Image: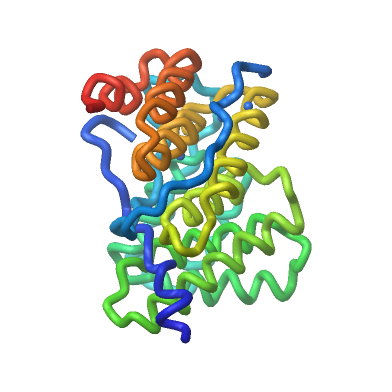
Length: 258
């Protein structure tokens, strides 16, 4: 049953743009309304969104120094890494780079264990379940179907918990929409995918511009493309370019669309 129902959640591997790194809402033209979703074949595992690309407008932040993971006291290094992952002073791109280091070093399980300890001590902090969900996402792909399905279930639960604590949490909303976009068609998540990405675009328009916001347009357009709604995909990418005219990924998607 787990493999049959939850196996669809075996998604999310790290995405690489050909350019430098990216994962937006003032009032703007709405993303085209949804239509009944077209049943399509299950898509391959989606990428974890890229860190913010530097050619997009961004709010200045103080850089955070990433602690080396080769420290003699590995436990201390893990604690320092977790401090940075959940710090509001850590930018999206810095967090992405740190996740990459942790994955390459085989430290994801230790990070999850540390985060779960902190969650017990700080049950009202939405940054902790958000980070747990991201850590589990970075564990994909997982060869064993049952293990992959269970990991996907825990990803979903983590973002649900974060959004229960803070419904406006941009990062948790973004990753929740991303994971749902790769559920198979028979799970009938299409309307929720469009609703979540569209609501996130609206929210981004009320926030200071951040370069990772461009990815909301990119992934919503990708979703439309996958379900056979090419016109809506193009309209979404074009809408993104009005906000991020120098974004190379949006430019390429429009230039190479069928």
